[in-house]
Length: 170
Ligand code: S3P
Image (cartoon, rainbow, N blue to C red; front, side):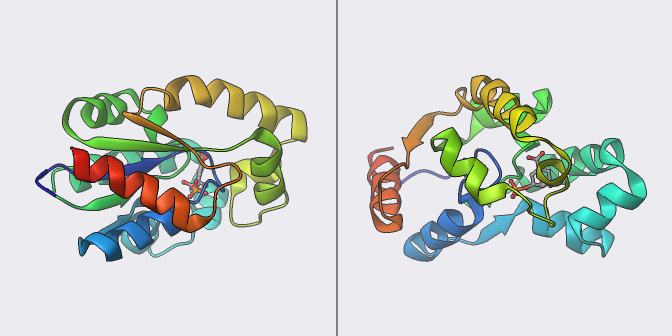
């Protein structure tokens, strides 16, 4: 492994960004940073509470600030929140300077994973049709990631190995 770039995991809520990111970081012995956790620690509040008390716009501003700061690191494994990559500045920075992986799943799998998730305000307040539209709309942006990992039907180990193979080749 030669690259000094950060490895960035992105994709919808429920796509396994934190779980896969954390496994990859252990395999590569590289520090893992989860943007949602960083935001919660910085504000001393759970994401659901931030949305409820301060609103989404406030959350998105903090998300931008913290993510751009974290991306100044070198050679870390970073998991974004589901909406982070939609921010144009963050998207540009990642596409130009880092290695990014989009964890892609079928819509029905994502819906099953996120429906009624109390800790995910966007999923909780949306109808099924709204979520389907969100997934389709976001997929256009997610596709700017350097690598699209089709996770459907694969074990966690297979997903991890696919990512490691790509990383080693970089
Ligand atoms: C969001 C996804 C969440 C979290 C926040 C907003 C989104 O992260 O950042 O609730 O807009 O998709 P996860 O993708 O880790 O659930």
